[in-house]
Length: 182
Image (cartoon, helix red, strand yellow):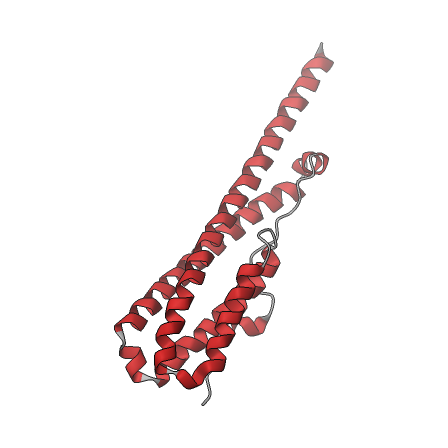
């Protein structure tokens, strides 16, 4: 009788742990979806931004083409490749910084209302991406703690729960403020 009660408590505890792991995994997936939505919004704005800049900075073709290339590369990363997506998006962010630095060299462009609105929209999206990244990384941390902590690691290994990668920039150069030279 006592043995049966202990077994029942262990099973109930394992179920609670399992449900906690499932919840943590779902929160992580929802957080990744939030990042993905913001990255898509940014990718959709980039063509409009580039068309506006092209009119003023036609001789900056290489910079503009690089942004298009990096946008396409970021969109081509498979949905589940968080590390690859983080790297591609970091490079794209750096290239967008160069576009905004170009605006400083072209006062007419900086004063253009369309460019200003696009720049403001992108800045807002960049802030939302940053918040989404923090939320995702917090959800990944919570899942990872459960996957690695005892006794939940026992349940996690049985049901093949794995650690989630963080959305981070691997290359320190991607964190640098972009510079534009003429």
